[in-house]
Structure formats: structure tokens, C-alpha cells
Image 1: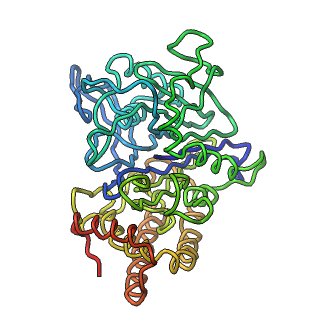
Image 2: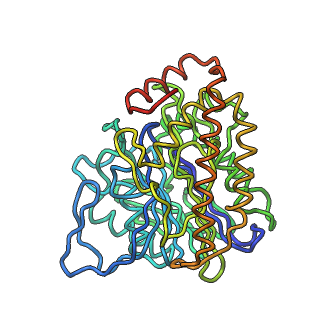
Image 3: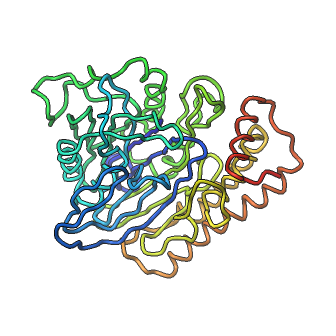
Length: 423
């Protein structure tokens, strides 16, 4: 379960474009943040994706990717040309192909590596779908979990939504804003498709699985908070939306929370394991913010520069490691989540103070920026966030757990399975 949205310049306070996405996956699946430079490749070179190999492109763009540690592709990312992209699972009547193919995360990375515009990225995905199809497990531990995909792609001029079923697709273009979740949003109003004119793309959806995903409620929540047309939306508003708990009860009911908290192994199985917000100005400037950890309501959005990434955010694995920023944050996050009613409001106040010092004041910069002041701002944001968590860990020792026996047992088991230290 995931949520992705983009807002155009008509609605933003800086006349910029803002992309935001939560990656909701299995709760103990480490997600890393990597920066890959632009590369020129030799002719006839093959490239290994998650399950299959395909011909490499002559040149690939520089990218920043947020990705599950074990997958070649990415849940979301941005490239040096100002293309930003993320994917969502779609539950449809058509099932993935039995033979291995490309998975949605592969297509995100391929689109970012091979395109200069949002429309080009959509064309890259459509062309690769036709050649290789969608197939292969998308779950980390749950190898039966496979799905179709939708994509939201933004550049400096427009927003593109691409939704797929098997090797077919439909595309729609937006200017002001768009949001996608785990449901098909394009009906007969598509502008480009592999299907005959007038085909209702929504007819391919699986209504039962879509309902259980809670996608309609989550997408409605996002659309409501983007708000009416105006020029007041900023990255801080994007942070708040990604932290959203519908009704303030993140452990109960179906999957209606944008900030998803896993609570038990049956219905509330997904967890927000990473978050990304990207702001583009009208020329060549970027502002890139990542949590580099799970649960955006329990950590800061921190600025990163493609040419100088903080240590440890590209490290992850099957078990806890002190070398991994994601796993170090997880040791704090699990402790805080089991005491959420006591810590959420005061912790979030301190989180926003750090964001006010670093993320909200971070200026736009070009992709290959080497400004030492900006590099220092990024490093200090991560340091301050880690110091905040260390301080709270000491305070948590004297706090009783919230009374949620099933939830707490679920997370204690996850911690034990992954060697996460719980004091």
C-alpha cells in the first residue's frame, strides 16, 4: 500500500512543483537511499534487473533512488533532468505473468535512468511493458505477493499518470495536481493507451482487493489536504500529508492511513518504510528530502545532495546493523511506536523544529552542487535527527507501553527476528 501525489506551480508558494510519496511495504524490510551517477555504457551490454536481464541503454542519467535493499529497482526517485517518479500496486482482474518479467520497481528505475521528461519516462515504461511484461514476486518475505502497477511522473512542466494492466496501459496528463493510490483512477478519459479508443480502464480493477487496500479513503485524504487552487502549498504541507493518520488512530481499522503503521499480520500488514519529497523550481534547481527510515510521523525529512550523500543511508540488509541508518532508526522507532500515545505530539514538535532549521530553509541547488554550506546543512540535519532519537531513547526507558497487546507482540517478534536491540 502506498500513496503518491504531485502539486503544480499554480498551487505552490514558491511557484515550484512538489512530488511526495510514502513507500508502504513489509514492516521489517530495510529501504535504502542511493545516488547513482550518470554513465555511458558499451554496446551490447546486458543489465540485470530484479529477475531478468535486458539490454542496457547507451547512457543512463544520474539518479537518487529510495529502494528496498534487495530489489534492483526503486519505489521512488528523481533524476538529474528533473524527472521524479514513483509507483503503486494495482489490484486488477488480470494477474501478473507466470514467467519472470519486470516488476513495478524495475520500471521506476528504468524510466528515471532513460528519460529526460515525464512523457519520455512514460514511453520508456510502455515500451518495456510490451517487450517484457510484468512478472515476479514483489514481496520481501511474502513471495506470493505480485501485482500490476500505476506510476506518477512529474517534471518541470507537467504531471503524468500511467496505469498498467499486464502489457497494456493508459496515460493521463495533469497540470495543477494529481494523486494515486492502490486503485485505478483512469476510466475512459485517458489521452493515450494501448487499448481501443473508449475502453474503460477502470473496468480492469479488482473491487474486493481494492476496497481492502483502503486506497479510496487514502487518496481522498490526500486530495482534501492538497486543498483548493491557490499558492500556499509548500514542502512542509507535503511532509504533513505523508504523516497523516485518518482520525488520529493509526493502528485501528482498515488501511486508511497515509502514514501506515503495521499492527498485526492479517489486515494491518503494511508499514511506511521510507518517504521522499522532491521540489523542482522552473529552471534547474532541486530540493530533495528523505526520511531514510520508516514512519515519517516519527522522524524528520532531511535534505540530501546527489553528489554528497550522508553515510549509512545506502546500507541495509536482512538484519539489524549499526552501519545502516535505516536499522539504527528502526531500533528507536519500534520503541516509540509501542508508546505512541505518549510520545507522538512532543516528538513531532521537536521533529518540526529540526525541519524548520534545515529542510524548510534549504535553498534550491543544481544536481551536481558542491557547495560546502549545503553539504554541511544536510549532514547536520541527519546528525540532529539521530541525536534527537538517542535522547528520546533514554526517556522511553521510563515509559510504560501503550495497552495494545497484539500490536506490541507483533513488533517485539519483528525486532527479535531481525536482531533489533530493544532496551
